[in-house]
Length: 77
Image 1 (cartoon, helix red, strand yellow):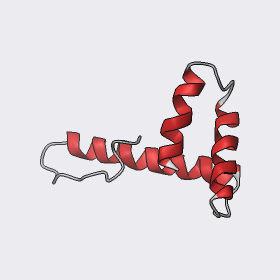
Image 2: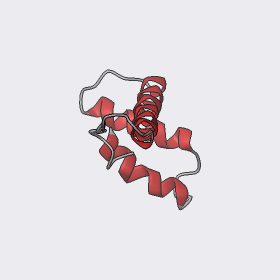
Image 3: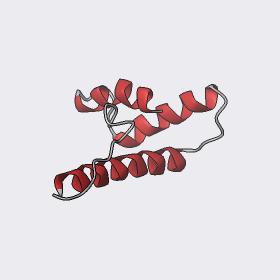
Image 4: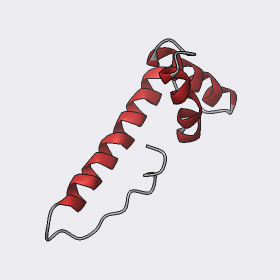
């Protein structure tokens, strides 16, 4: 999913895809073609969760005295 997001997100910023909803629809269609049983809401919510975890990890690392956390999908978000 993250690779597909990296593919389609620049298209939204360049206006080749009009809205983020259309982008999520395209990603959902490709995931379904690969055999994943997901719908558009599940894909959107999963990305929101990944992004929230990334932000939480960054905030955790900014605080002094905390141990370092690593976000495994940092390069994708």
